Image (cartoon, rainbow, N blue to C red; front, top):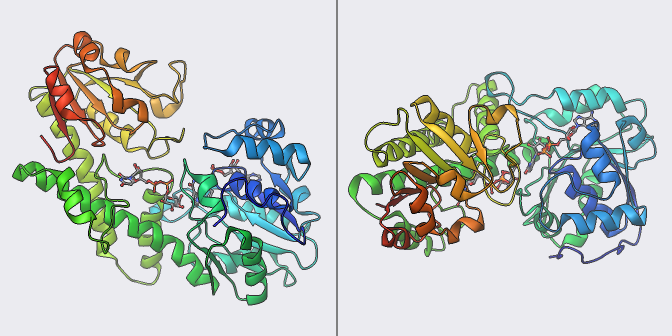
Length: 441
Ligand code: NAD
Ligand code: UGA
């Protein structure tokens, strides 16, 4: 496995690569390939993202990214343009890394993928390989081939499994590389671009590669919903979810990974991809009740947490001030797309609460639509001031060392809910707090 920064300029035969879309997937992909020695042109239509990249700066919060990015840009191996057609004009490999948000009835919205095909079909050099790295429904490789209308251009599916917050590490040392296509030679050529990562290579057909991506993400949702359901049962039975996790996680068949109960799973991918898999199954008259139950359990977990906060508030949230710590969908990212914290703050507000929130990535001046109705402050103490309950929803490291003495002094009453089970509740209790966590009172 490669470590970030290893194998700089190591490839024997540098290839010409285009990456369309400079987001959480496109940037790490471009940086990885440029770092190994390929020549990469990245196309991004968003001016802010483009101008940051051109300066060698990262427009997204990702550990280890900025140094590598700056080195790739200053070496000339990574350049940034606006127009996808220009990016592909000299490319041997073209990676589509554009967004595929949730569309109608849970189906993936492929309009950005379609638009790129229209943009690049005439500009693609003879024999270039187009690679779908975006998460797309089964059949999209063939749809892309049809839209391109270029029999000389093979289309390969190469799903991406990186996580936000560890995107660089995951790109340099992936668990596996999956490539699939009708043209196995093209699929193998794409796989060889990632050989320096040392990851096992799975070569298959395009529909299987496309389905693998959804299977991986939805498997994770079932594991998370299982442990969240167990934490609800712990609350009802007076059992302790932290000890329960230890008691089952040491079994290697179960494992500790993705076993932390929390405020529900969210982010830009697990929610949309679980709905998309149900929609894909629907196209062939199949149902997957397991996935539907994982989604329902997730919604139930968020309602359950709100009812626990309401209990801590004394039975009603009407007119109650609640302090919230953390708004991103998990720690170490600035991403709030489908954040469980925002679902919970919205439920709290619907129940009549006034929500004052602090997140290290959100300045109080920020006015994005998703923050409407929230009061954003700059410190944990400001979030706690005047609050009847203080609620931790994102596992930022700084929240593991909260000063409960100081927080209690500014609150209306000393009540704390740890939505990530990262705080030593006994310490809060020693300062007079009623303190509960997920599946532990
Ligand atoms: P993103 O929204 O951060 O980035 C996509 C970028 O593509 C945007 O900056 C957008 O402006 C740009 N774009 C769209 N159309 C364009 C065009 N025609 N020309 C140039 N630029 C264009 O999205 P993301 O999070 O990087 O996700 C991309 C895909 O990868 C999605 O399908 C997602 O499901 C999948 N994925 C995401 C992650 C993740 O952790 N975010 C992980 C694995 C897979
Ligand atoms: C997820 C997958 O883990 C990646 O493999 C995949 O590539 C990516 O989706 C994608 O397709 O975009 P990511 O969205 O970055 O990655 O987030 P995760 O680390 O998977 O976390 C998802 C949600 O589950 C978060 O809300 C997180 O807080 C929650 N979670 C995770 C828990 O509640 N408990 C855990 O133990 C782990």
